[in-house]
Image 1 (cartoon, rainbow, N blue to C red):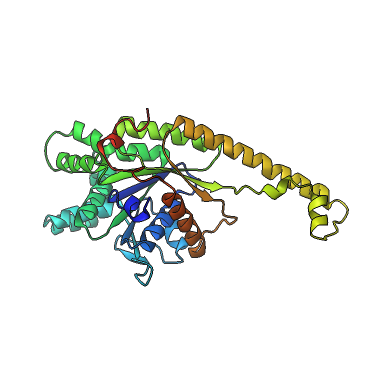
Image 2: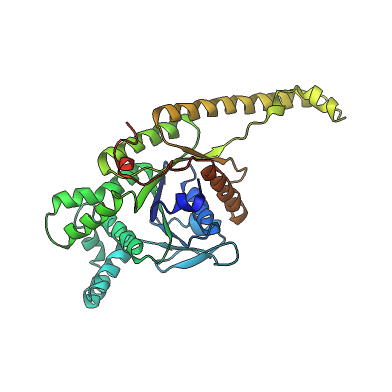
Length: 333
């Protein structure tokens, strides 16, 4: 599949996953990949943790957009911003000519009270801002770094909950607009991230079914992060491998190398077992990313992940992620 076609199948991609699976790194890599194929890309960060900016060696994100990758030859550019409920509320009021009210909310300390007055209102304020950004058409793609999987379901359910609870008025209108965005696969889809381990895979499968059943959002391919590469050479005994290249092992080295090879082989078998199980229980394409031997992901690492994403997308059959009505009902049964 052509990567540009895949990445523009919907205007908003929401990236969600269990904490610790590399969700933010995947969000950043997805944005870099989109930029590299000519798409003006915006990252929206909603939790304010600061990890996103550090991956690009940039300053912390703010409500105003900032460039993380400049538009240049080979890149259309990546911009980013953080969206908090408080800032989104002030923006909402300002857009409606209510500057004096927003100033009063800030000066009197009532902002927190207003933004938490209705259950789910904080999430709908953030999603309402994302909806506004999507409608502006200032970017070819918006990539939203969603909360961790448990909160992600509540986050995305806020629109339907508020639409049911509040039947009239601006809150109902905002909820209806957000719900329309979330349930239209041509405008929005969710990409779930996991690692090939039992607990994260279990949670991803549960989250996928919950999102379809409770939110009605379209699901894109699953991104499997941290996949360890198969090394066929590990099957050769260390003594034989050393002899083939003319290396003499010291006492004990063959034993240590053998134990390391056995550990790597066992991990690979467990990994393949989880990948097969996920494919059986969740019939969605898998985009696999390599394990990075680092705890601090930087620009070079993002390039590696972005290239791997593009290769995995190219390997998808044409039409594998077509945004039709079937994408919102029955993708996982």
